[in-house]
Length: 327
Image (cartoon, rainbow, N blue to C red; front, side, top):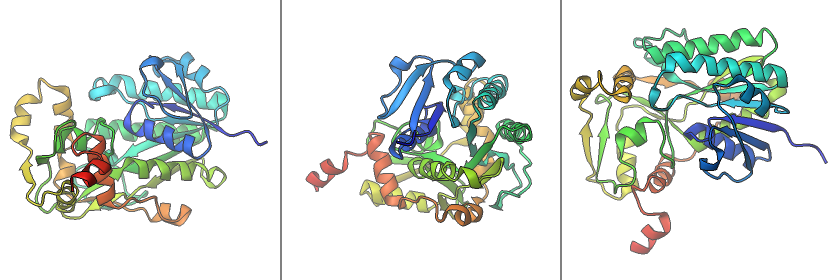
């Protein structure tokens, strides 16, 4: 019997890392996930947990033995010490990938495109970051491009703001709604009429794994854009949340950016959120033409179904069966 390929997932306790781990396992891969305390990691069917720290080169090297893919989905929690931790962690992954002969998968972001880049963005759009996180993201991709010239292959898939049934370090569960509480109101950060790019994590993870499975066709350093759910005027997400909640009069509050400015010097997460305000003021749309031509249409759950699953998972709505019984 053919030996299934092994993928190492770094950051599997987080949103995108966990979702990619689940998808890999569901599609028949052997999956190894590394965490500092595996005993506290959430159980994921078909995933083997090993102990290790992404900041320790030896730990990553040991965990990567036999791997065909290393998913680099690890980020410092709460955006703390990005400038000190992000690039060293990536260097450890590159070294481990070189030793194992593995391809690196990096979940990318829209941060690479700075203020003033609004419009339809494809893989060839010049990257002119205006935020600290955006500059670091660009440096990460530049480093992977350099590593590809030395035989370390990588794949970057850029996407908009994440949302899913599991709380994470994202705008949806930290800004729009309050996990664990009934959905009574939405706090929306965007300017009226401004578009916004959203990525439903199960769809994004499935698309990423489908790309990985085309390994022989991928370039040594390859990038793709995932369109996801693009809200062209900022109103589609709100309308869908009203439908998902069953409350057509669901209140919508504006995010008090002015108050955030007062808290920013003292609260790291708030400071980092303010840095990305420009993405809520203009229309930054990811063009997925290259991806669609490569694997066909990206995986796409209808927005209402994605939001119903997300809100139920976050504890903002009762599970579907309970809602049906109430109805």
